Image 1: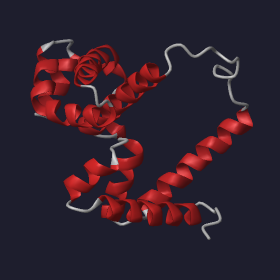
Image 2: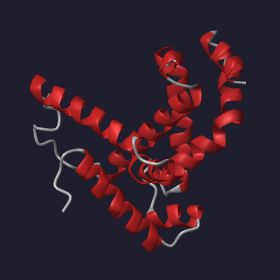
Image 3: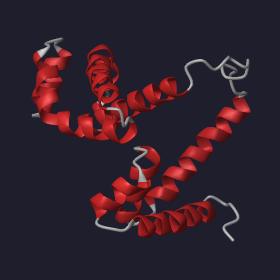
Image 4: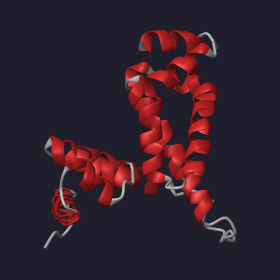
Amino acid sequence: MDDRILELLSAGDQEGITLLQKQYGNMVRYIVRGILPDAQDAEECVSDIYLRVWEKFSSFDRAKGSLAAWLTAVARNAAVDRRRRSRAPNEEWDGQAGASPSPEDEVLRRERIEQLRKAVGALKASDQLLFYRKYYYLQPTAQIAAEMGLSERAVEGRLYRLRRRLQKAMGGDAR
């Protein structure tokens, strides 16, 4: 199915978006609803996601990952962007928000991100899933607990131990 969707989107055929919605619509809504609790806001965001996919499809690179992985990132980023905008619509610009980091800061940031990717990749699959659900998809602890069949306290305990392991793996003091 992905091959057909990719073929249609590459050709600029809107049927590709229709098939994409049928194939991945539930996944996209699941991701967005975990980040945006307001149903109307979430549905508007889902519509925006398909518009982004249509407009930015040329940036998709199959060599870097699957269509599902790319769509997951697009959905998550769109929902997080919308959440940020809705939280502080009237905040004044402080002059620092648009400041570019120095080249040294950017190199350090990229190295830190790579170090975190490796540390998370070394975790067992269940811990990776927990990490991504909480810190990438921004799901509430209650939702994670309910869907994993655990108590909220158990999830919080696992997250605490997980943060300590990651902190230690990244060279921090995990007393």
